[in-house]
Length: 95
Image (cartoon, rainbow, N blue to C red; front, side, top):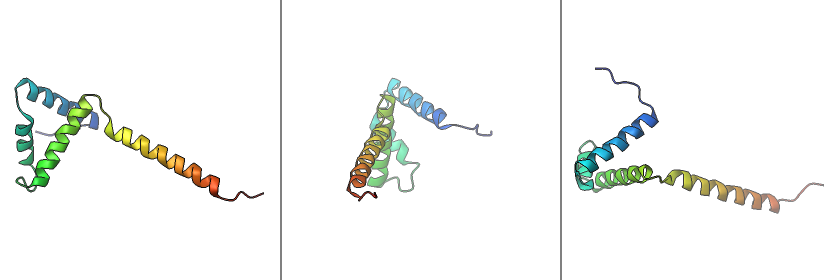
């Protein structure tokens, strides 16, 4: 069976549906993390457990309306604009 082309939006929707199914079937976060680590290079490592837990927490946040990457990017860009403006005020102006 050939895998159909998936967009990022399709994959995100698929993950959200999986979270819904897990909740409806009383699958705990610990169970999900344990299953997720089975697909990782070193399933028993703390790093794999932390990565799986972080991914789960991130997807739950996004599903709940959070946009942590957007918020962080916006703050970084605002800081860069502020720093750039401050630096341009310090350079001598040619007459």
